[in-house]
Figure 1 (tube, helix red, strand yellow):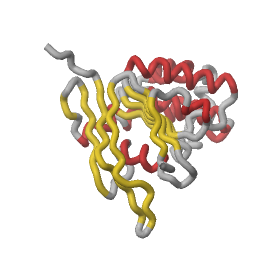
Figure 2: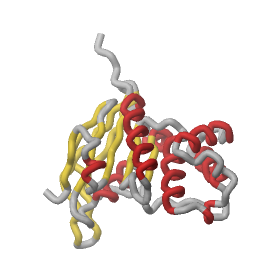
Figure 3: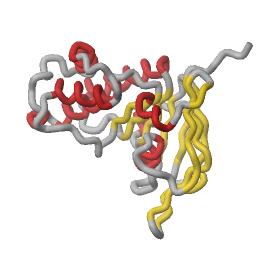
Length: 210
C-alpha cells in the first residue's frame, strides 16, 4: 500500500492583478514534505504577495491552493494551524513583552498559550533572557528573531519565509539555517528572497521575473 505523504502543497494557475497592474499569471507548482522552494524576482514582481496568498491573507485573482495532510485535504478554515509566516510587514505589539507577544500569537493559532513552550522557542532563536523586555526596546534583529519564534511556536508543517535573514547578524543567519534544516523533517519551506545565500537553501526556484 502506498505510504501517505505527511504534508503537500499544490498551487494551481495562480494569478494576481491590482486594477491595471498584473503582478503574475498562471503560476503552478507542487511541493511535498521535505522540500525547500525559493521564489525570486525583481522588486514588485509579487514575491511577498504570492506568499501572502498561500498564507490566506490575500485573495488571488484566479487559481487555487490545496494543502494536503496525510493525503487528506486541509479545509480553508483549518489552514492557519498548518502555516507559519515570517514577513517584514508582520506586526509585533510594542507595548507587550517578547513573551506576551509569543503567548498572544500562540492563542490566535489555537494553541494552549503555554508560556514554557513559548520560552523554549525563544531560546531556540537566541532570545533567552529577553522574554520580559517590551518589544519597543528590542533591536531590529531581535524583532526578526521574535518573528521567527512566533512562526514556529505551533510547529507548522508549512513555513513561509519572506526575507528571513533581514536585520540578522551572523549568529541570527545561522539560526535561520538551523530552522530550515529542522523544517525539512517537519514539512515544507517557501522562501521569498533575492539574497543568494537564502535562495541557495532551496531545492527548486521560481523566478517571477521570467
